[in-house]
Each structure stands twice: as structure tokens, then as C-alpha cells.
Image (cartoon, rainbow, N blue to C red; front, side):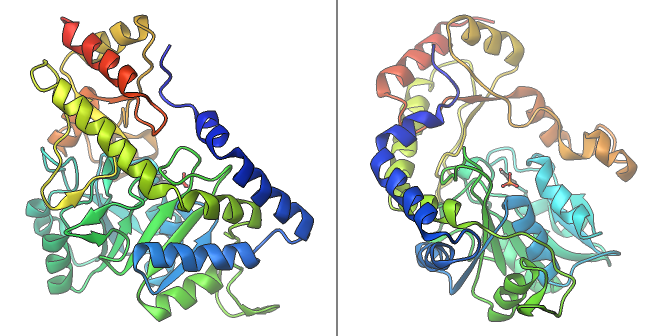
Length: 365
Ligand SMILES: *Cc1c(COP(=O)(O)O)cnc(C)c1O
């Protein structure tokens, strides 16, 4: 049996360090917004080459707080990709703005910059590119269009900790970058967690207030904020794990390269590493016309796979009111029927990768 993921393996590999970090928080008696959060914020900012980082409750709220800090709200529209986790759009809805979409580029699976300009309307205030599966979106043309139309760029980097675009870390390419530390992400907590990074001191200050009830100092509520604080336990755990992130990402890239080499002459479509990107392979996603049959066959061999994501955001029931029916974003819709995520995590052995690739090569629809 090869599971799609097993978070116990990572814990076991660095158990002593993690246990010590957890114990020291328990001994400190301080649990919310303390020394570990402050230290993790500066360590993560340095890792991203950002001037500021602010720890928040989760990735969805990181996006929501970034939008709030940019002054985006009711009456505004934000453009994003229809093939992301629906949480991307839910963050836009949470501030009262309306998500609008641009179809994806067939090779990158990310928002297609060629289609971006035609989607910009008078209410558009921001673009939220998603670095899906760990591969950065093509940011230069996106930033160029945003500059010309005076739009904010808020990066959804929830799947792309450590990814590079033309040598620059994601998160600092636009105005704000948003990360999730959901347990299975490349950098994952033992619960929920999130972070915004930015080089803009005003945005950083605003998010710092907004995440903690809009307070400037204790009991001085200056903004209509929320409660979206990172806790000390998660920060202490993430500080330990951050030291391993580059090593883990290199292992993911090695596994991906092995899959891609082995699947070269198979009937499935492997992902493409764009020349401008350092892809960190949060997910290794192939495409297959007979996906259901392949997934069933792999399950029979003991290989667990997953689908990211089976329903494009605009076709979710929650977004029926947008009146964007089938056919609105044909590439995203076609890919939703064809994508299949194979197991990829640092602890997965080369032997298992070879075994999975052999099953796929031997399979006939
Ligand atoms: C995980 C994820 C989110 C949401 O992050 P949470 O921490 O689960 O709230 C948003 N966007 C993308 C692309 C994600 O993968």
C-alpha cells in the first residue's frame, strides 16, 4: 500500500526537535502571539526575502486580511484562477468583493496572462494569481498588466513555499503574498496557520492590527478587525520545520523529475516545469483522459491518488449566483475532468516512485 500522504513520517524523522519545541511552549505558559510567533515571522520574512511577515490563523484568512489591508470590499472585483482551491475565492467573498476568473494556460495550469486584460472591468481592484501545485504563475506579464490598470497583486502562495520565479521567491513579487501552513502543505503546522509577507510597511501594519481585532494597542480598536492569530505552538513547530524546507523541496523536485522521466513515453500527460520557475511540487499532477479507470487501477495496485480539484470554483454550488455556467472557462473545466495527483512527499522512496510509474506505464485504458 502506498498512501497519498502520511504526515507521521515527517514527525518521526525530526521528533526530538519538535517535541522539545512543543515542550518549551508548554513550559512557557504563553500561547498566543508571543516570542515564537515574532521569531518565526522574522525567519519566514528572511526566507522569502520580504521586509515584513505577519502570522495569521490560516491561509484563507491570510488572503482575506491581505484584501482588507488593500482596502478591497463590497462593490469590488478580484480576478483569480478557476482551478484553485475554492478557499481562494471564499477569501474574496469574505470581504464582500466578487471573484471573477480568467481561464488557465494549458501548459502551466496557472492563470493565463494572455486572457487577463479582457477580464478587467471598471470594478476590478486586484489580481490574485495562484501558484498552483507549487509552480509560480507567469508573474512578469501579470505585474505589467496590474501596473497599467492600477491593480493590487495578491499572490496565493499557499502551495508554493520556497518556489522561485526568475530566481525570486514567490510572495514578494506582487504587493502581498499569502501562505498556508495547513498540515499537508510543503511547510505544514500541526493544526491551522497562515502568513502574509510584504515589502509594504503600511500593508504589514494594517494586517498586524486586523489579525488582532483591529487593535493598535491593547483595548484600542482602530479598525474593524478579526481574530486570526497564529499561536505559539504552531510557530514553534514551524520554526523547526522551516530549517528543513529547502531539503524537503529538493526531495520533492527529485521525485517529480523521476516521475516525469519515467512517464515520458506513457499515455498520461506529466506536468511541465516552466523555464522561469523553480517548481516546489506541492502536488505532482498528471492528466489522463480515462482518469476514473486509471485511478481505480492504481487503487487496485495499492496506490492512493487524489484529485485537485474535481470541480472548478465557478461551477461550485456556492457560486451558482455568479451565473458562470459550463463552458465559461473551457480549459479549467476540461482539466478538472482529467487531473490526477500522484503521491509526492519527501519520505516517498525512489523505489516506490518507480513502482507507481511502472503501474501507469503498464496500464491500458
Ligand atoms: C490550502 C490553500 C488555501 C487555504 O489555506 P488554509 O490554510 O487551508 O485556509 C488557499 N489557496 C490554496 C491554493 C490552497 O492550496
